[in-house]
Length: 390
Image (cartoon, rainbow, N blue to C red; front, side):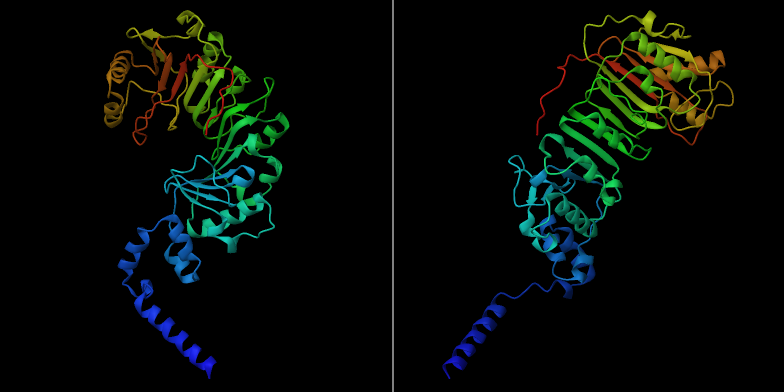
């Protein structure tokens, strides 16, 4: 009798609480209302709601343009820049992560086995997040000075990580044999970024300049002949390099005569600032007509319809493209020169301050809007290797 009495009281209490604090009837709302409610949710709210049922998981799906998988042992996880969110594979949070929405394994315990390695947990977390926040593009960032539990080989043995669109090596040092593994992954749809990372001075790899976008923070190992292998690159940036003015001259001449599209933008920064600049060296054996104090026109020896190499023609020039080329003072001078000389030209804009050389080839193709191919060479006083910052 006493047991029945207390069960009745418990039932009344539960019923009272349910009516006093009813659950929000999300699925009973009209579709547009459901959509608006879900769009206002944070990353953590979407993840928690997705765990309630398969139906809710489909409702909270949101496509993202890009995010990072970062590997740093117990602090590994995912970074969603657009959502300002960090998702960790473990229970620890980085000390500089206060400005982000941070989630730990406590928020998705059912996804991650307790006895799994941090790398395995990161892989499983990635697959789960791909179901909720699908993205066709993602990067893998390796914090080299904080990886002790695994190796680069094991990281990229994971099939999902082999499909990344960007590889970032950050803060630390890397042996040539391990860097070779990264370089072998080069293709024209993948980017590479190496920052605050020591690379052997004698390093060389035939695929080092075969990525789509390239950024080498410490490029003291780069020789001018390495740059000749570029093909259909978009943005290439090498810093602290040890090239000289003769190398730049060699590069310009090779670029003019090259029968393929090498790159869209190239930025070169020297290691030292005490190089005495001499235009006679940079433009040696290069036909160039000076337009003003900083602009030159050079004859282009090849013709192409690529969106990268732009060559201008004096005859049969489409009026639409001509108008685009004419935007800006340099474009105006180039157009006038083309009309006057009736010859193919390459416009090169030279500066003696921080930017030394900017070159553009213009092509007779109205479907390609003005997007100049540029070489930028700049001096910058920097240390051999900067101390990494979070």
